[in-house]
View 1 (cartoon, rainbow, N blue to C red):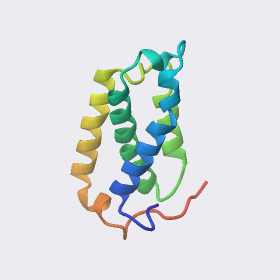
View 2: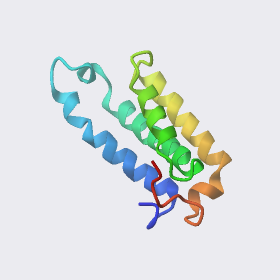
View 3: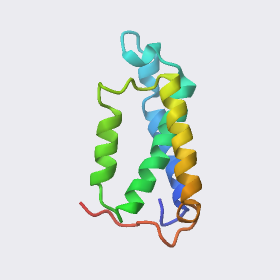
View 4: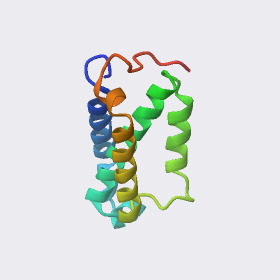
Length: 116
C-alpha cells in the first residue's frame, strides 16, 4: 500500500480493515469481544496499525518488530480493547506521528518490500 499512498494513510486503511475483520466477534455471544465497546476497539486497532506502520518503516521492511508488537498487543497480560487502553494507543499514535510527521506523510522513505 505504501507504494501508492503515504505511510499514514496506509496505516489508517490497514487499521480500518483490521478492525472490520474482527467485527463479527462483537456480535457472537460468549466471546470476550461481545462485552467490549466497538468504537474504542476500532479506534485502538487503527491507532495500533499506525504505530506498527512506523515500526515496519523504521525496520526498513522487516516483519520482526511488527510481529512482536502484535503478539504483545494480543498477550493476555494486556487487557485488550478496554476504553482506557484504546485511548492510550490513540494518544501514542498521535505522538508517534507528530514526532515523525515527515516520515509518515511522504512516500519516499516508506518501506515497499518485505524482508523476513
